[in-house]
Image 1: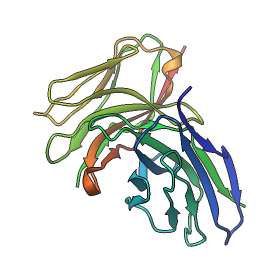
Image 2 (image 1 turned 180 degrees about the vertical axis):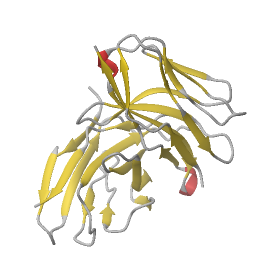
Image 3 (image 1 turned 90 degrees about the vertical axis):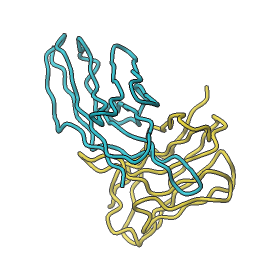
Length: 113
Length: 115
């Protein structure tokens, strides 16, 4: 079955550490996205990528980094510069065709130890 | 910039009640509009969408009509079930760099249906 796989489901980080969240899709989608969700709030866009080797900052990119070396993969690194990283992180992808919806993974919950 | 405002929750209803979750938007141009649903501990699932004025999106008994004159996309269901308990997000498409589609989300409305 095609879909978006995020791993791990739960992740714990010590202060000062970088951590990388994985996102893989086998839907042959062109565009991929990372969102952050905080309790009681909507989703906020961190980074997005339309094609391999190209990505753009979203609304809250500070303290995060991404790469897009393969079409299927869009890993997100939460760096030590992100002062409040505890959140639920969601990855999404879509076809480049206009008006097609984004499809979401099941998320990774990141907590600080 | 473009924005979405949703009815504040939480909303609690009894089974078989009528549901309305209000959503209004501010946008330049003609964005597509979406409703997504999130069950506990999961990602978002697309519930329905509408791409132009007067379009009606529908799925699983839920409906929403794209109203350009009132800039609204209210979600309705005639008879809710306990299994409809979830968080519902209204979203609109926005243009990013190089024409990439970005979604702008409302804050979400938590719905609880009691048996």
